[in-house]
Image (cartoon, rainbow, N blue to C red; front, top):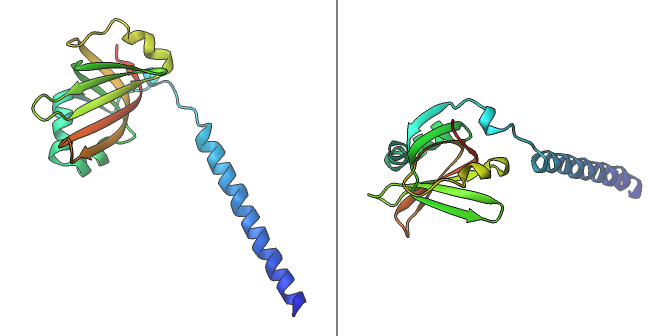
Length: 151
């Protein structure tokens, strides 16, 4: 009976080892994934900031399906500028609802934001990460990553 358990145990250990190695490979791929510079990518959509935010307010699921993981150019007036650690965040805020789109700039494009001021009209291109609704604030937050000013 002991001889039967050993082949079964070896098979189980081999399967576990294969799963651990596969998991490590997937983790390494995701952790080291490099993205092309957003400045060199063509936007799939070009929208105005307020219309874009309102689209999420009207049907969040539909808007997320449409925009998530796509390069989007958003045109609007800067509502807030936040310098955070190694990045700069720029917000477009809908004054009627307090919902906003926030853009995190790529490290190599942070210098572009130095001359921006609240109230400036700008065009920002980035990868849309989707929205989150806050019941406490009764507002949507739409996140963008890998952003650059659109020239």
